[in-house]
Length: 113
Image (cartoon, rainbow, N blue to C red):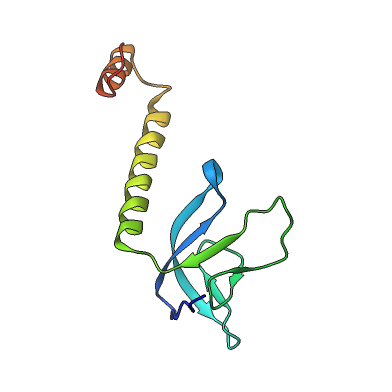
């Protein structure tokens, strides 16, 4: 295993889970302890110098890990977050949306109104 070799302020990919339960986000290194434990934004856990989450785990817990993000990771997560933002807007509009607006949305996605 390779050490992460990060410093405070660096961006890392925080990942965990698998399949439909897979979670990924870009996090910022907030703190590195004298013993090398890494604390990142968006997580209450600490990670070792290899990026493995340092906590007791049971078979039901999703274990998280850190890695250095690639340009593809940044793009994939940015695109996914943009789509999620669009879906949240549509959810908010649902209560005030007219039938005609709903039909236009369905048509835009290639469905039949």
